[in-house]
Image (cartoon, rainbow over all chains, first blue to last red; front, side, top):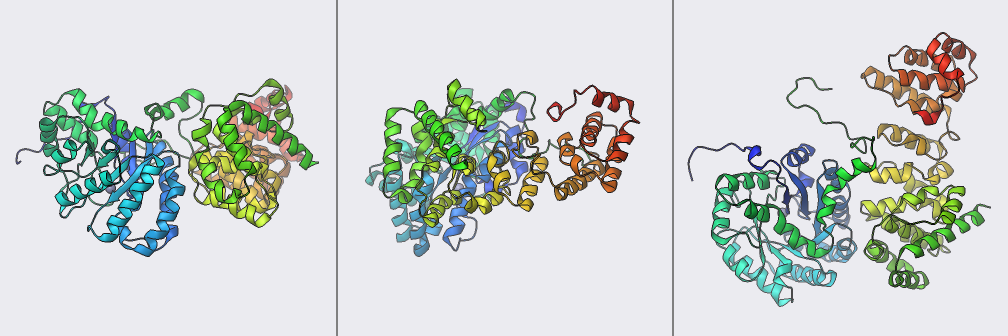
Length: 314
Length: 285
Ligand SMILES: [Zn+2]
């Protein structure tokens, strides 16, 4: 995989629209939103995840969930990016059982809210009994609420963890077409697709999937039920992973149609099963300017963009 | 008086809601309103409401609009049906037990997403026991979210009717900072006060120092309180290059009783002329 590094040429994908179905914007800066908007990201899903250290009380969970559907959604809207989320108790924190019990009690309050497009990200980390218990309980909640499920698969012992996640989802009577298995790799993709699930891939430096490998996977398996995300979070990660991967796919000769499917359309199809995601909502910002002609597009105290190449800061 | 007045408004709103939803949804809402365990059910009904009502703008008949307008609630015409239904739902809640009523509604604020928060703050003028929502309203003014702030600041009679002076002043100041539609603040002129005028003047000076413009509506809140000290600042503004700011300051001065300022305006021929022809008013900014 050596060779001269290629620069990200945004012109290769200019005019294309992207959907990042897994990105943790809470841990990113506002500048990232700006860069994502410039690169063509029009909508995203932020799955509820952990903050890098465990929360110690119920109120922190409540505030976190509230921020996903409140402040974070607003911040995103300031750049014309439609923000959705999935709500769930993540696998690591499922291991604090007394707290997990309390979180399960407030989850139904959040999963019916507008713009919540699934239960997620849930699944296994250490593959403990407690993780399994809360994974199962949340699958039941998804069934009751009629929501898709976004499954986080473990870093360690991934293949077994992925199989087990799928087995359990089927055991609970979920339609695999409503379950998105995330963080796949070459070892897991075939089985996930063969069993009828959605296969999501996280383009994340060093640890998960590189986008050159991603190109090869789409070449081998086609574009059906495959989607690409950045899972960018508080780690060294890249919120432009989706447009960059599209750009690389273009350079490596994949068809525009396949690129559109894996970096935009498939995620919409999968998560629209929630009834909470509508492609026409992506343009809300543009409509705003039309509706309030003469008013500024900048709302809520937002300031005009600064010119980053200028030494003068005004 | 206020009770009867609000009762009539609520009846109109009820009929608007019913005209804009289907029978299944109407029955679902009626069932909730008659339920004996309202507090337990409220959160789910409130959250799920848009799925039942849809989110289209409400259709209002001319008769309904006339009555709402006369009562000061004409702005409801611009709402969507989910927002109006949520507000109406809250207005019907059993409020006999004040503590239960408070904790039931306050729980909704605690877990509200953006559209829910907008509806909750829009509902403040329609909630029973207005005095218990003062703190919540003041808290809402601290929000960073544009549409939530707009629900509190613009076209909402609750703040001017209920907030103490400090919270009210904070609302007005925040409205300028976040570039809200100042003339849509209900009670704006009635609740002008010297403290607010002085704070706004400091804000204007900061803007000028940074080379930025000042919203002309700011001077509307200053006119009544012009004294020798404030006049010194107005002079700076009048000597400024910005014509719109100059005209707004001139209008504020014309509404004041401070003669030295009035005399000073007469030394600017264009301003003197603009005031004389009577076309200048706060709606022209
Ligand atoms: Zn994640």
